[in-house]
Image 1 (spheres, one colour):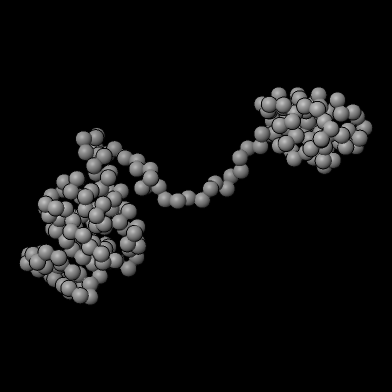
Image 2: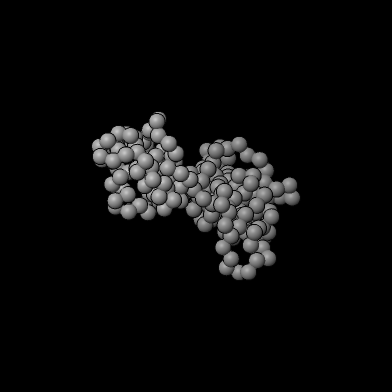
Length: 207
């Protein structure tokens, strides 16, 4: 049997909860039921779910209650189902329930006056942290031809244009001319930027 603290001594509300199987306990409780008054939700420092009871569905009052920490803001007829949900064995953590309550309340405010069925996006509250995408970004050299790719690989293996020219039996000028064509093809600024991308250095080289 779940034990709850009812802050407002409202006989009808207490009777409804007891008939539903809840025990009213002022010391050892698992949730708090509070009525939202003219001054909003009374402050509470207890680390248990707070369910706010409101007489109507006014979005602003629901939002004030959610901001104050309530995990649910319901009418008296909805209190039993709300308590069962927040005290369920698989219920989210208190912090997560409070976050969801704020999202629901903010969506209700945003939808007031909008067309029915509108989906409001609340990016900062609604989005959960996600891991960076595992899909690698497309290589800037993806547009190279096979022959150009072979030249770049040779430069990378040699560590620079000068050594690559010796290994390939050509001269640096010819290689730089090809590098400039490759840079233009893949929309890079110059051959120097291309060399930086492939991790090659040629201190004596020209741009």
